[in-house]
Image (tube, rainbow, N blue to C red):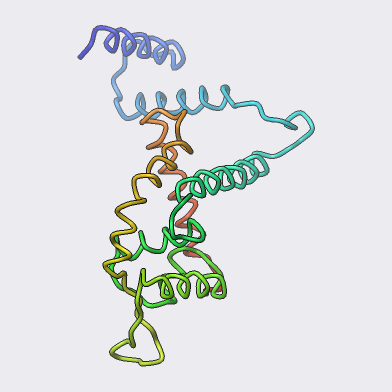
Length: 203
């Protein structure tokens, strides 16, 4: 344990004793809860500023705007990653990545995984079939349902362009430290899980 950590802990204990008017710290649970409340209070006092805050613009508005803008930046970087490739859009590559990572799946599952409208998803899949990047077959239990699987040509194309896509992803998150990225992942996954569970319609 570093000297600085010990010093900070002693300072925190002193503040606890002063605020609770106790002569000694004899209740660890109460102390830990107090320390947690102090951290939350400090975080609230360091609330960031944003454009329009003084006019009443809400945190929700800022978050939504930032997510939309980041989506557009990410799309632009992804578009640059497939320049001079056989793909029409970066979504073509994302569908191949999904199949490579998760294996064969139905058209509906593939479209749902990529959060597309059915009509848009079908267009992407048809392009990939036409380019021999994927192939479809009848599902064993229901011939009306089609199973999509990546072909060898699709895997080869993915190998060629996957590194460019990784570099595009890095550009989107470039200014963040590793700890900031991990914290952002927690928040984004929480948001995505909520919306996945509460979707009223599916492709």
